[in-house]
Length: 501
Image (cartoon, rainbow, N blue to C red):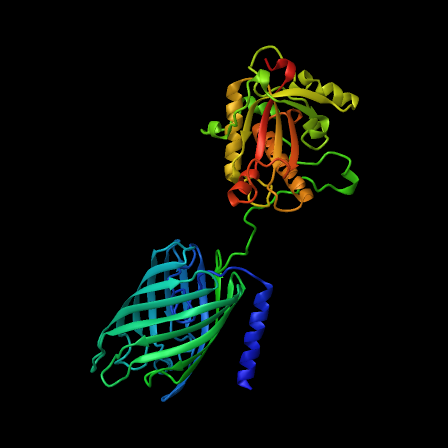
């Protein structure tokens, strides 16, 4: 009956874990040091985390049964350092020595090799212990432990091992030998919220005439939340000096970062620029409004080097390819006075005379007012190709590399000092349907254009966007390198044809 109840509890924990996936982090043991149930690992508690654990430890051996309630406290001091302590029994029922867990412990553990995300890690653990006993000859005896802990955990499976040396003070009327301490364990995550554990501990003979000490333990942990961990373990003695069997029930609460992080996407997508409510489908697509396009001439971004690496050679202006800009390619922005206010060219030389707006120079403003289908005859004077890392795969939000590249390009254009229009062309590889790639390329072009308006202060009337999808590859889509090259955004710097010379 008891076995069936334990099996039912474990099955329930695993089933609950399947519902809430999340990667687990360092978890304190029964003795405070982070690790498994009783054995430490090379992991350390996250900086700023404070964890308190309360356990019920019931054992049975040759000398009878013992029930104790150990408590442990763990504090993460840095990304690689933790301090911990434990008290053997809050029941104060004199069962400490019988259970084999009768020491107050205080320790420091530091990871000396491997980062937190590394599969292999190595740590040093230094610990001081003091026995708590009603026997005057055994109370207050100190021992000192130093050990090396190694952990290897690539993904859902982990292996941990430790070995150390413990120096024991002698009690009155007896002699304690120093001991070699060793142990380890394995862990497996059937799902990210549940952990199956098997571990073993060993210590050489402490007193002449006694055997070595050792136990094997199997158990399960369930991470109910980042701040609550439930533990269940069953142990078996390997030598006569250890209890015949032991049952562990534990709970630990962690305040701060917690024992795991809720997973989030690698890149947080902005609202889809092509998703428009039905009643607004005929109108322009809303994006963030720019503060003021007039700020561009004054608030220039920090200078970045390397724009020449992004620039694609083009023919001289007199021989450059002609590009016809249509009104349909205008950057879709919210149709409101705050955005549609005409702005002067951000790169025009400052003078006392009021310069003519770029849209009016191109003849686009008059066509807008008349509701016509305006088109502008232009020529390409410069062309930039944004790097592959501008976007994550299957994403349209800009990465940090992409934002820096755009700032570099706009800084170069400001230094050029000529009035210009921009057309932003989005391209993809051939992975996916043609319709999907056409929409994705347009989303990316809109994201770049919106960033230029919102962060570089360029008049939205001077920006045009177009999505080509997979229609214009520049490399072979049969290779990963070729597909990466085809996933690109190009910025064409244009001038009206009559003013290109």
